[in-house]
Amino acid sequence: MSDDLVSPLRAVCVFDPAIDLDETPTALYAETRAAELVVTKPGAHAHWVTLRPLSVGDFTACDSMPTAPVKLMQAFRLACGEIENFAGPGVSLKPTKAHRLPDGRERMIWDDAGLQRVADVLGVAYIYELGGVAFERAVSGNALSGSASFTLPPSSELALDRMMRLHAAQKARTAGTPSSEQSARS
Image (cartoon, rainbow, N blue to C red; front, side, top):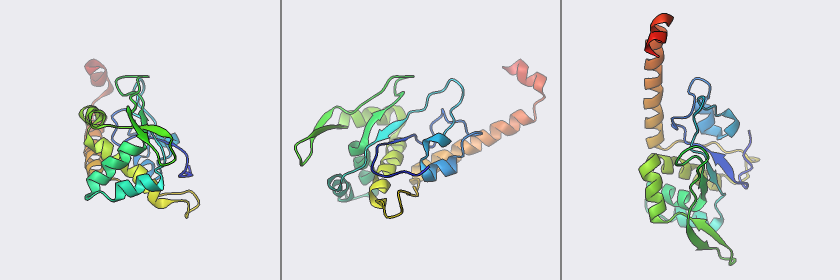
């Protein structure tokens, strides 16, 4: 479950509706981003991202932004190389803007239209949370032997809290309903 912080990381937003809240230890996942902890609902497909590690130059570009939300947006723009299951199972979305690196290589990053499309479908909180993961990976470095402890931005904390409350209320309603009534409702 240790993140080496230098390889691409596959991650999902903690409030992705495909996550099985009964089977996934969401608090532990939010802290570790260990993909093996995530269990999805039968037939559901989470919106997984692949996050490249930010270079020192990328990190400087992010950290020089004037506010925390803009820093997270920039980190997502530079780090996210793909969103799996974006428009449906097996349909990925990738950034389309060519970005030249100082060594002359090119890689693709998100342009404003691509970020808007992600925000329209998955929400800005999705971008903030996963941009925050990329940003914190760069801050952590390998000083802690490849382990990082991630924090959720307030938007993700609120969304996850709301989902957990709704899930608990749903479970309480179904727990109080006799099985024959549950079958009749299905």
